Length: 305
Image (cartoon, rainbow, N blue to C red; front, side, top):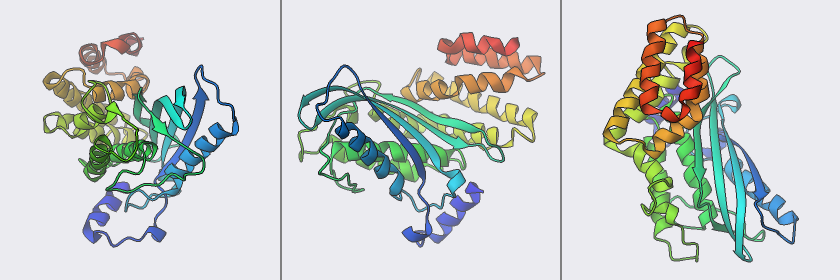
């Protein structure tokens, strides 16, 4: 069980070696051209290959992930502009999933849109990463989202289990926002926009919004991971998790993390409770979701059918 592995890791500190660990991520990168033309079509294929290898072949943590436990990442990058050779303006959608214990089902951890996924790239320069120093914006972007996905995964197995990885994501954000090495100016690393990666990380680590993270643990570990054996108990835990998230939303309404959570979970929540026989529970859930996620209300209303 991952929870036990997390505890053992805390006890042994940094004794684990890279050779004893499997990679944490199983990433798939898809790159498309959005109304732009590239004269060399092999460049897109090489960029896609380099991004995939960067995410999949690097060891990001000191945890041991068995092959079936790896976090699946799907990155959809749409190149929208090429101001000059080697400079790319893009958007990115990331979907991260993890397996549900004892089943073949995979549940979404994150569904994120980044509308300023901008970077420099040349095939001759391999992607590299430093945990404490800026190398390039593409390296920083991929590492930031890798740690965000790993942190969310760890939060789903232990309360606040993702703290170490959110801390590393913050280090990346800080050195990327202040870098002067390249011309890659990126407002997504700062508070310039209310709905960017800066605010996503701040939502996750804000002490006033801890119910978001404790909600992840209740939703996944105490809910989804026992659903196959104890569906009624799982629904109770999931409803408690959503209640905590609703309370956090009262403190800080409509945060970016709230939107990312429900974008990832709306269909799943609907399916979980549609088969419940507890009419009172369904009504309580609908009242909660009407308040906290009205944009998906049409989906939730099918719970009573």
